[in-house]
Figure 1 (cartoon, helix red, strand yellow):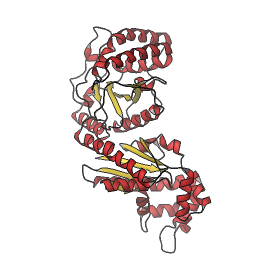
Figure 2: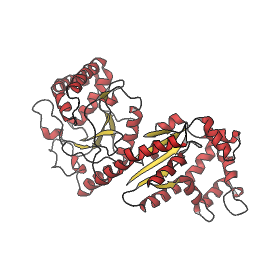
Figure 3: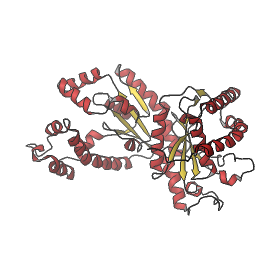
Figure 4: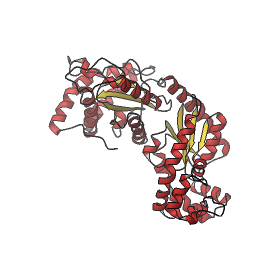
Length: 419
């Protein structure tokens, strides 16, 4: 099972997208419907609304006067936040209940208009955004009975498309015909959602092609922030860093987001032999092992077998100190390397140092890019990136000593990343 959010501003067409996904077989839960259920007559939710906004929010039929409440909250951001503080937890709880009742191989879709926080987006394996021209949105709302003034006020009260796009893995444009939007949903279902769900259920990373460098994508920083939030949520708030070439501004790279998950010891991610006593450790338990592995897989990051050790540096270093675990991404639409490393271990420190060094020294970054271009050309057409990675190791061995010298000269420390 995977859980997908569909979000968009009022009048954008998100309900049309959700309906198309339902036709494909998705289990669709409409948050607007849930929002009505949780404040139905006799519910604790309605009682909380009355306590917060007054008895005049109740109509003659003993139900919530939604028009009266809308006039209050859409004109007052503080009042709107207060209402959301009442209804959103109730809606999320009801959604979780319905999701738990879905079949195990489902694509569960939450049609959620108000998705404004990265922490909320991180609770879904994929977030689909829908956007449309403001004029089209106003026309649709007027067609539903709103005045143009009310339509524009409601649009203005929500976050803008650019802010919303940063929370979305996919953005569908609803600027044309319904047929065009339906075709886009068809492709999304067949090419991404169906294989994504199967990969999560079977615990396997999505396939990917060989090493191809692309120009830096403007979306990489936002993509990384969403993925960092998902991994951290799955790992109970553990530190996650964006590392690798996509973390270097302006650097061409493979379209693969590299992340580093920090753990106290590797046994919490899969039962490897205990680390040497000179490495930082924590008491491992079988429960932690199973729980973290299962949580990462459920979040869309199953283990990638066969990658248990980084190349030790300098030459002759104890390879046990360079152990790691690797997870990939079950989403065929975005490749991810999730490196799981022990806090303060040499590999953990080097991944952060190398990133920061290249960010700070354009000459070294250019040198590394030139190497990558040559190696990518030499290994073009390969179906695995392993040989590409191995070919960089002779340069990396020399770079390791240079990077350590830079760290000493600058006083570099692996500071906690910003959230």
